Image (cartoon, rainbow, N blue to C red):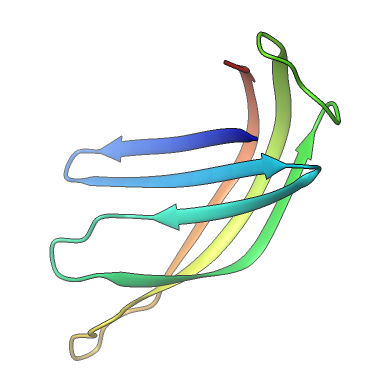
Length: 96
């Protein structure tokens, strides 16, 4: 299994996307810590393209991720917004 962690920190905010690749299939899990309550995230779109079908330790993995998710507070406040998150772009890293 290959795990790709895409993490960003912007001052008081941070968010993470974990992509797991196993047997030619992948899953994505998105999360963001909230000070005001937990959120439920629903994946609305995900696409992963990589340059090879199999990798060994030390190989370079290159690809593109297109991911979209909607988030809502589990215990909503009055007029709680729905959050839309998009993570997209190319990546290149070494398999460890």
